[in-house]
Structures are given as structure tokens and as C-alpha cells.
Length: 464
Image (cartoon, rainbow, N blue to C red):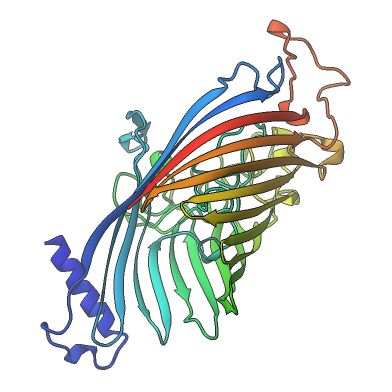
């Protein structure tokens, strides 16, 4: 029944975009046919060398680790006789995380890590482009190119990935591209391609939702902590710090002689509204805090709107592939990384983070040889109040090879070097660290210390 309703809805929607669509007969157009696919990545790493002395980032950390990343895709589409294609796209994050319950204001809610990653419907045509509505990344992130060369040729594995990535660096990972609106429910438009060029735009009213399935997921959808229900639209007096997310993208994709080239540039922003420490009751204003200030009020140090700029290119010439991707993010509420301490977080909206990735590969038969260099520059992460604009630098270098076992099945081996430079030492609470239990300073600051590691990594991927 659900499949029949989906096909019927697509027929009705398609009719709105074409004068002749309503005249089609049931025998001419076919309903959406749903397909199933997925991807599974797993990896193992041994950090054969790393800075792990007391007080350093890798102190008492396991030097061997395994990771996996599993996505299930449900996709369906059909092209009608009027030239319009209607479709649906859903991805499910299927991690084998321990299940449990979280006590919420609406009762108990599951905390299992198996979640819908994105889900949307679309209509497209070669003449007027493509429209989407649903949960999806912003157009800048979706359109970005330049990070799929390197050892594996897959942005989900490598030095520039948040899916399968091994590093003991205090800065965590370098990653382009950041998803500013967190796949909030949005409307999206992509133009048709004209002489290789295209553009796109997306708008998200509220990062947290639009979803209506499950307890507490209507209005401001903040998961287990949400208590705004019964169809309310987003409130400026709840915990979300920004609303009205906009993204724009443009790019080129074509062939110039023997060279295949792609280039994109994008921009994302949002409007800061503040973030209340507690949810505000319906019809009420924000609370007055003990220090006399208004809860969630914007101040001169935290009122900057967030911005993300991105550009990248990909070039293929015979067996060679070269890619580069660059992203600058500014004015993130609370800072982009966990290293920002409480004193920094008040000014973190003024900070700038720069991340880039350069990758190269050469393919011969079933073997792909590659190298990748990823760099992240993070202002203020060391907690230095006297020099807040000083940026710690996190470099990750990988070399290795991938062997294609068969269609959709790859095995990769890599050597990785991670170098973290705080760009100057900073010792909090005085000129010296205060000794603590076990000899580790009580005011230890790993973000202000350099870090160096060498890792041997084996990874495999399955796509179907």
C-alpha cells in the first residue's frame, strides 16, 4: 500500500509541472520502482609510534583500533512520458551501537545509534533543473569536489574523512566539507547544466528539524531533549543558536581535450538568534540569569553569524587523478572543536578555521597508488586568551595503495603520519603546570602541546 501511494503521489506532483501531464493514461506512465543499495567500510590501524607520555594526547590510549561505517540506501525513481523524473532518496546509518533509553520530558526514548541520515523526494527535468524537499546536506556540501582522489578515491576513507579515520591528534580530524545546517529539513534547487556550468541553492528554516515521527520531534527537533510538540514551528527562545540557513553553489564539469575537469565554489550562512540554557515555556520570554543578564541574549562577543566558504577542483588525465578542496569556516557557536575551553567559547564566533586537502593518484589495472595531504588550521584551540587568533596546525599525510578485488570491493593499505603543532606553547593558570595525581599536571592542556604519530592502516570497502 505504501508503495502504491508513493507512486500515486509522484504522478500528481509531476502533473503540477507540465500542462500535458494530466492527459497521460495509466498505461503510459509507471509508478516509482524502489531499489536497495548500500556501502560498508571498515578499517584497522596500529599506531606504531606516537607521543604518549604522561600529559600528552595519546597518554594511556589504546594504540590499536578498529572502525566501521555502514549505510543502507533506499532509492527509487521513474521518468514519465512528459520528461519529468520523480524520485525518493533515503539513507540509513546502521551502526551496531549498544541500545538503551534516555529519560526525556516526553518519557523514555531509544538512544540506539541507528538513524536516518538523509531522506528527501525530488522532481527534475532537463529543461528546468531539479527540486528537492526533505532532509539533505546543503548544496555547497553536496556539490563540493576535490577530495575523492588519493589512495582510495573515496571521501569516506582517508585523511579527509569523518567516517573511517584514525588519528590520536588532539585536533581530531581535518574535514572538508562541513555540513553547516546538519541536514535539517530544507528545500533545494539545482539548475540544469548549461555549457558545463550549473548553480544551486538551498534554504533550511531550522537546523534541528521538521521531522514528525517519534516523541518530541515536531517543531524544534533536538532529539531526546525536545519538549516542543503539537506542530509548533521553531522557536527563537529554545536551545538552537541559529536559524534561516542559506547555501549557494556553482561549478563546472566538462571535458577539455583528453582532460576531464570539475570545479565548484560554495557559500553557506545562517542568522544567529542566541541559545537559551533552558527551554522557554510557550508565550514567555527568556529568563533573567543570576548575574542580571537575559538568558540566550546575544552579546558583542557572540553575535556573529556563521559563514562557510568552500572551493575545490578535480582533474582526470588518463590514469592520473588530482584533487584539491579548501574550506574556511567562521563564527561557529561554541567553536568547531572540543578543544575550545570555556573562556574561549564566548569569543569563538570570531574565530576562523581553515581546512584543505590535496590528493593525487595513479591507477594501473586493478591497483591504485595514491598520496594525500590534509591540513587544518584552528584558531583559539589552545585556549590562549592573550593570542586568541593563533592557529594550531594539524597535518595528516598518507601514502598507500588500493586493490580492486572486484566491482564494488576494494582493499587498501596505508602509512599515515600525523603532525600537530600548537604554534606556540601556552600554559594555563600561571607559568608552570601544577602537578596532579600520577604526575600529570592538574591544569594539563594537550591542545597546547605538539603531537606526532605514525600509523599503519588497512581498510576495505563494499558498495552495492
